[in-house]
Length: 462
Image 1 (cartoon, one colour):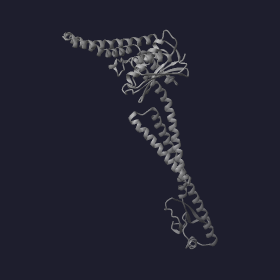
Image 2 (cartoon, rainbow, N blue to C red):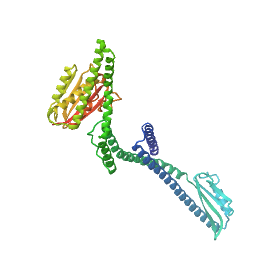
Image 3 (cartoon, helix red, strand yellow):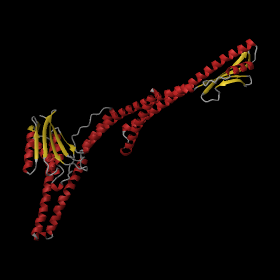
Image 4 (cartoon, rainbow, N blue to C red):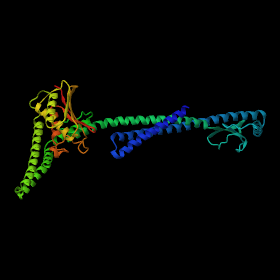
């Protein structure tokens, strides 16, 4: 019963283990092999193969040892019988043939034993008596001893023994060796996973840091590094980030700005050319193209104003810090939005004071509310929650909707917008993040929807 239980449990554990490894390998085909998986495969396969080989070696040596012991027992028994037959021949003065006939008569009508064989052989090797197992039978060993009478050999005795009992004992041990192999393999897998995580975790943290920098978080701090190699890598990445804040950043910024100005400038040029070609003589056409010029110049003015604000907060930071109630600022932002036709609800708690610049913080909340109104469902209200706790004050702005997949990873970058037709410059969220970082805080999108999109501004409490 125990053997069946152990064998069944080992088989089930092995199936689950193989299925786990197969699933990880299938995922690695599409996503690449991770460091954890590489350590897992290397260490688990090495230790598993070693455990299996060690188990097979133990079984083989045990089988050889027990076979040798059985052969020795058969030889000792043959020597004892040979000594008894030799003394009987010497005492009675008979020959080996008489002893063979006597043994044959004694065994007549009796079933041959299945676990042992006995044979008396003359000097030429002919069997004078043979009973029980044959040396040619499977799973048998035999031992021989000469029959000596007064120092002269008169024949020999051969004893055959069965090894099936030994094999059954080895079969009983096989499940336990399999269990040991599986336990060693699983232990190696867990060790490999631990080692892989220890190596992969700082790399993943550095990857997150690099992504934040690429998304515009100029004040992002490198993650704490443990180990000389990881510390060197972290310092190298941070040094690279500082160097890239120079000319390459300016080049990228200029390229983005020229791209954003291209459309309104082209609209102004086209409208001017149409007016110069004679549209001025037709009042309706002239008014339409003058309206386009005004729209384009309004967009350029908004774009340049937002760029100036972003550059100022990033370059100068907070100059006039005072204790400000974020709840009151949120209420004022909601009132301004309602005056413009919005539907905004504010929920505020007590103790929401922070230290900062009221103008900049009002700008950040206004941008979040305007972003929610612009991108949310028109009939739904915008909910603003101001709460305090754990030494922080958070402003959460929620609206019904969903962030598009093509922009969800670039929300806080410059010039990223999906509502340019409504006057969006793509700088609102970039300004929010810059203001948050200037106040030692953070800005993030905590829910991309559906059903709700949620932005959160977090600042240290005063």
